[in-house]
Every structure is written in C-alpha cells, then in structure tokens.
Amino acid sequence: MDVKDIIKPENIAYKKTDVLTDNIMHYCPGCTHGVIHKTIAEVIEEMDIQDKTIGVSPVGCSVLAYNYLDIDWQQAAHGRAPALATAAKRLMPEKYVFTYQGDGDLASIGTAEIMHACNRGENIVVFFVNNAIYGMTGGQMAPTTLVGQKTSTSPYGRDVELNGHPLRITELIAQLPGTSYVTRQSAETPGAVRKLKKAVRKAFENTAQRKGTSFVEIVGTCASGWKLSPVKSNEWMKENMFPYYPLGVMKDE
Amino acid sequence: MGELRLMKGNEVIAEAAIRVGVDGYFGYPITPQSEVLETLMARQPWEETGMVVLQAESEVAAINMVYGGASCGKKVMTSSSSPGMSLKMEGVTYLAGAELPCLLVNVVRGGPGLGTIQPAQSDYFQAVKGGGHGDYKLIVLAPNSVQEMHDFVGLGFDLSFKYLNPAMILTDGMIGQMMEKVELADFKPRWTEEEIVKMSGSWATTGKTADRDRNISTSLELQSEKQEVFNHKLQAKYESIQENEVRYEKFMCDDAEYLFVAYGSSSRICQKAVEIAREKGIKVGLLRPITLFPFPNKQINEMADQVKGILSVEMSAGQMVEDVKLAVNCRVPVEHYGRFGGMIPSPDEIVEALEQKIIGG
Image (cartoon, rainbow over all chains, first blue to last red; front, side):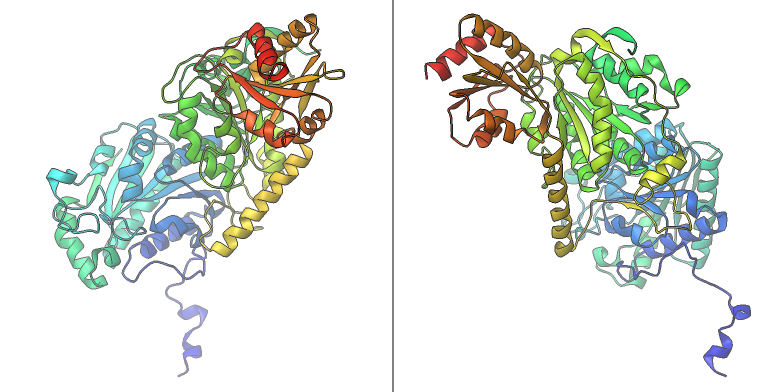
C-alpha cells in the first residue's frame, strides 16, 4: 500500500491547527516553547477566537512568538508585556489579550508590571514559561534559577548568600485578589499537555467572563542553557524543578 | 467662537484630550504636571466619551500602556515631567521603532537628577536629539500659551497619525501652571472600530481577520541588512517631516538688526524684551520655533542675511543654541543666554545680555 493511499481525510487522526503558522521554529531541540505554542494555538482554534485574540510577546527566546501563531501581536520591551496588555484589553474590552513571558522577563525585570496588572485584576491571560534560566542571552542566572544550579553568571552554582533565593513568583501572584485563576503546569508528557490545554482554555474563558487575571505558569526545559540532552533535561526538571515549583492549581475562583 | 474658559495649562491638556476624542490616557503623578491626571480623573471622561484613563504603577508602565494602546490604532497619550520622562525613554524609542502614533507631554522642570520642581527648558536635547537609544526622532511641538497647549493636543495627534511617529508637546512648569483664557475646541467623537480598521488596518493589532495577514507591532529586525533598510525608511520619513512641517512665528523681524531665537516660556519673555530694547532704540526681533523638530533651519538662516547677531535665549545651559548655530553656519555671531535650575530670566536681563554678548561683543 502506498503512503498516498493512507493519507486520506477520513484517516487523519491529528492535524496541525491553522492558528500555528508553517514557519520553522527557531527553538532548540527539547525546548518546551514549541509545545506550549501549539497548545495555545489549538485552544484559540477550538474557541474560534483567532480574529479576537491579541498576543503580547516578551524579550527572550519567545520574542519571535509572533512568527508562529497566526494572530495579531504586539512585541513588548523586556518585562513590560502586562502594561501593553492592560491598555490593549481596556481599549478593546471585547478582545482576548494574553502575554507570553519567560522567567527573566516576568519574574525579574518585569516584576512591577506583572504584580500591578494582576493586582488591578486586568482581564488578561498571562502565560509564564519558567525554565530557570535566561535562554536567549546564552544561559545566565534567572530569579528562578535553583540553589546550586550552574549558569554562565553563577558558574559555581547559585549561592543564596550572593544571589538570594529562587523566586516563586506564582505563589505571590496567587495572593493577589485581582487574580481569579492561578495554576502551575508542565508539558513534558502527553498527559501533562492535556492538563495544560485544559488550563489554557479555562484561562481564556475566564477573561471573557471578566473574572480578573488568569495566570498560567508552565515549568519547562532549556536543554541548551542547562547543557543537557532533551531527555536528560526532562529528567532534571522532574527531579529538581518540580519539588521547588510544585505543579497544580493554586487558585480557582 | 468656541467655549471660552480661564484654565491652567495642565488642565487644558486634559480638557483638549477629551475634546479631540482621545481613547486612552496613561499617567503617573509628578510635579509640576499632576493636574493632567487629576483633571481627567475628576472629569471621568469614560462616562462621557468612553475614554480610558488609568494611573499606572510607574512612568515605565504608563509609556508601555501607550505602546499597547497605540498598537491597537487608538489615540493614546501620556504626560510627565523631566525625571519621569527619562524613565519613559525606553518606551519612547520602542514606539518610534515600531512607527506608532501617540502624544507625549513633557512639562519640564529643572534638573539634572531629581533637580527642582520649578520650570526649565533643559530637556531640549532629550526631546529633539533622541533621549532613548537608536536613530529616531520625535515630532516636537513647543507651545508658549495655554491656548497652544490646547491646540497642540489636536495638532500633535494629527501629525503623529500622518507620519506614524510619536509626537511630543515640550512645555514647562511655567506654562503648565499658568492660567490664561482659552478657546476650547468642539467635541469630536472617538474613532469607531470600523474607522480604525479602515484607516490603520494595515498595521493596527485589532484582531487578525480572515481577509488580511496578521499585524505585528514590533521594533525588532535581527538581520542587519533589513534593519539598515528600515533605518533608511525612518530617515526618509524624518526628511519629509523636516520638509513639510516646520512651524515658527516671527515677531517684529521686518526691520530687525538683531534677533532673539527662543521657544516656549522664553519666547514670551523675549517678546517683552523686544519691546524694552526697541524703546532703547535697539532694533531686535524674535523668531520663535514652534516645532523644535522639525527645526526652522531655513528661516533662521535667512534671518542671518538681515541681522548682525543672534541671541538664543533658553532656560537651560545652552541646548537649542547648537541648532541655531548649525542653521546660521557661522555667518553671523550666535550667542546663548540662559537661566537654569528652575530660574526664569527677566526681560531686562535678556536685553542686557543682548547688549553685552551681541551688540557690544
């Protein structure tokens, strides 16, 4: 049987969503961004909100997210995405507005913007991808870098005396009355991706109901920055990241 | 004739914003411009026109809210004073790089650093020469009355949308705080979403519909070859602005043998200095740049055919004087006279400076 005989509409079990473009992703092998992009794109397609969704991309590896999701995008300065999203949503209240930010962007340089956007209860979705390192700039220490973790700016491992403790910013965000839904997810197995997708959908639905800010952290890998293979990265994440950044819903109101 | 009122410069910025159909104002308190935000909050324009007014957590957040709103094709603005405007500069260069329209108002106070809350003109370089990083320019308007504070809100947005470039009203604590009679514009409705899509649909992030490609508001282009092409495009735009948008005013220049060049508050004081000097028999005129970028280079150069010397008067240590010198190109003597750190020159001391630095010099 020829392959052409198999690839027929009635035999297709899975199809790439049209909300994902055909551009080749620049992400490294083993990086979590691709799966997260796909998950968000699928939810946008399933909710039929492609023409109503505006994404705000950060500075970091996902700065070029606008090349991969076929929606309107604003590209923010480092850490400022929640400020852009605040204005976009308030000026176009009927749209769906989300930010997509890494841990350097959201938990370091952008702490003021994320705290205040969440505290005001802006009706936006925040996707926070935490891989405990600055990926784009070549593997420097992030606020979320674990104690003892080696990076190019903590070459002997993160030292609490020198650098303080890894920041669990999602736990802080969950304390703010402006947030309605705060969860920490991952995307390393099909099961985890299914859970993530439910969380993404819930977050978008919440903003339509004007419940306040929905905040979805995704613990991910940075194989290049961690200097591990994709498989080893997932193992390292489970052994080291999950105990300090436990998965699950922190708030659902 | 429109409605007449006695208003403060800062208050009229807020009133004009509502009247020209601004969609969003994002601000942060700082003296001497807090009345802009206070007036808007008291007026509650969201009840009237649907205008969004928000006190941001910082100047940094405010300018990035402007970026987010401008990206949606909306008429958005912010105001601040010198230290706050320094904080906004990151956002300003992103706005210029993304070719987004917006209005910025800087009610300048003396610096550097925290400086003073009294008026100054020491942010000329920041407004006109850059302030943020990269080769960009703002359209800079310099009002010298409360009426012009009002008028330049509308003009600033018109120019900003015409050229897809941020515009700035560069004023100071004197004009911001002083009260004058002002004729207010009639109310214009805010743009509808249909109007925005029709006018700015090629770039505004209003949601990607099936009939068009996605719009991306960005200043990023990693390929140097493309980044250079983009920079050429920006420079061509600035040349076009220089060619078409110069605004200036001449006062008693016809028979002038000497010339003051001054903008904003200083130009008001120089008008009086012209009268005092003429009573003494000194034929001096005043050329007031209304646009600081584009600068009236040609008009100042032409005056160099006529006058024996030029005194640039600024409430700074000498910033605009550099542009006056470039315009004159050494054809006649050009000197600077300034008070700074929040001090305001008197007309008499300006006349004295003219006598000492130009006539006797």
